[in-house]
Amino acid sequence: MEDPEFTPIVLKRSDIGDVASFITRNLDTYPFPGKYIKDPESRYNISRSLWKAEIERLFEDGNLLASDTDFNCIGMYSTIGGLRSDSMDFGDYVDPLKEMASGDRRRAHKALSGIGKGIDSLKLPPGTMDIYVVCSSSSVDEIAYCSCMVQHLIGIADSKGTDLFVCTVMKAMVRLYEANGFKTLKVLDDQENDIKSWYMIHKCTVKE
Image 1 (cartoon, one colour):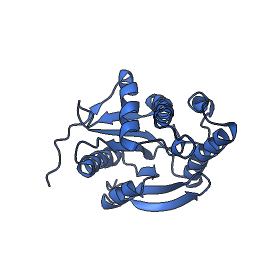
Image 2 (spheres, helix red, strand yellow; image 1 turned 30 degrees about the vertical axis):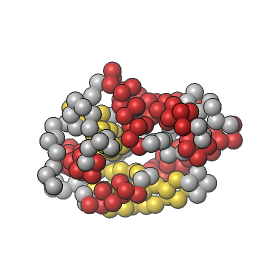
Image 3 (cartoon, one colour; image 1 turned 90 degrees about the horizontal axis):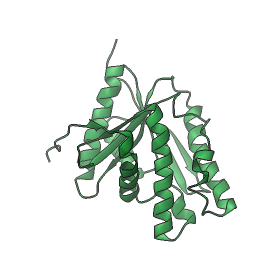
Image 4 (cartoon, helix red, strand yellow; image 1 turned 30 degrees about the horizontal axis):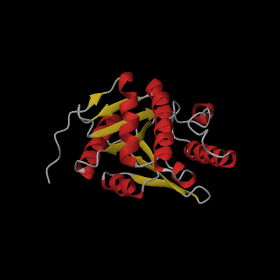
């Protein structure tokens, strides 16, 4: 199978709402609302609000890429020591989570913080490039598009002379990253929130 035509474009702040909608539709839900919010419309709205908050934070510190103007695939990346830290302000998520019961909100906060602390525990060098999310439309060849985006991000990391890190909660993406040369550093199994996180690294292939 041929790779799709792939000329990534850098997205603008005005694209944030569309990107949040795209990711919510194609990843179904943010990792945890589905466990606590059963109504599909409410789950979608909460997930989209959470993604929008994440993307707005990321926009200040990282980069948003699309495979093309049709948004067939989205890639977002940042750096360790920037967005990725245990200093994440839960206030960013209070409004999107207001429909949850207080106990569920606490568990959601714990889940978010746990993922961030897991990253911090790896003590990756500041400046390590970090894939925040890679997501493809279900209307195209998802594996081909996501693989092309990952390869593009590997190229950016190599050009910067840095390793490329990713944390994912999706088993299918673990297989995709492994197929593109990533190795698993750590697996965190948060059974309370039914979230399993894989922390993976692609070593820089460019030698100084």
